[in-house]
Length: 445
Image 1: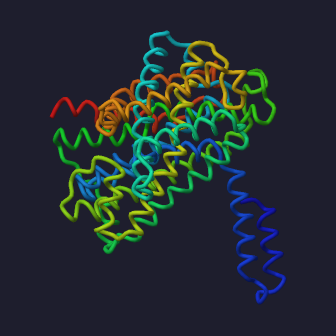
Image 2: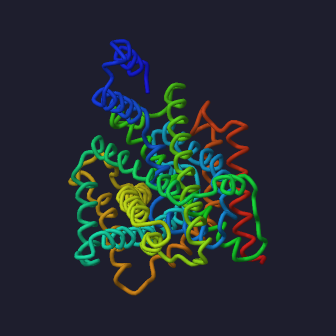
Image 3: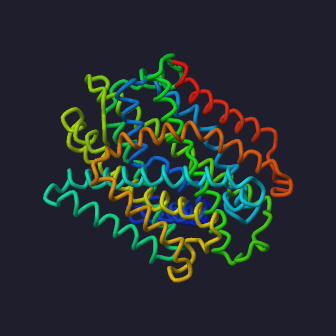
């Protein structure tokens, strides 16, 4: 939080303990949040966006289907997520360019085209599922407003903010929305009676060697370690540098030890927060749905609605508000990461720091991805089923894409002295092996 904050807090405390009142406590909290928000950035936003409504649906389904049996995956995925995202962020920070721009320079075009095609398809499906989930949850709270009006209004609001608000202010909105994930920690507290049982299963892996389990495991890995996260965090490191005046690639190339250290802490905080929330969502579903014989949850709205008779109206509302907040965070990130990928492939001007008239193609892709995602909710496609298989597809393709990014991160021409070390290679290769293994086992069982 910074020495300046600690000094101010000490000054306040030394005045007189008897004078400490709620106004002082609120002041301290404001200072702490201000310091925290100043020191977190792309890593925190990336981590929180990973627990979007579609991810919430996948984790809820896993908890309903397997109970506490897959809680251990939240802890397993933490070092894997950190290593993959730190590597992607480091590439962006050191090279001064996004992942796709680097791939174009150093690797065959077919690799770039496959990478970008996957991002566009998977992200658009994700956007569609997220729009439907948010509109459904708002409709549960305010049933008087029709689903169609909510979905369209939601898209207009998100696009307006993404296009019209400057990057400096927009990124702060995303940080605040990330805090909505705390609602799932509160929900878990409300529904848990036996903490010892929960903690036991959190650290004792339970693995069932059948196709159903492997598909669920691949979906969880594909939802958690997703290609769009690599794109987003790498590009946001570039956006952060542009925001402080490094407008050319030459100025952005390279990094100081302090910048690398700050990026790593930001990434660790973001991924740890993300996986704690993943743990809370799976555990909540196991405590409520699985224990009450509800094994199939097809949407976040159904989950919120089903919680009410099992855990009370308040728990249901908290769950719904979490879906709404994280959806508002994730949809612009999904559309922007798709646009970064395509814009860099086609050499278009790109970046959220640009005005609309400076980057028509970039903002056009954002608008198109959001609009197509909206249409998915009205053409008879079940976005949750489509999303589940998109997550499985991500799980299958992620190891291939990760292998390419590992190669980039080990390229001394690109990374210089900040190329992958032994520890980074160990964890990223382990991530690659585990994602490839879980995907392969689908076809074996």
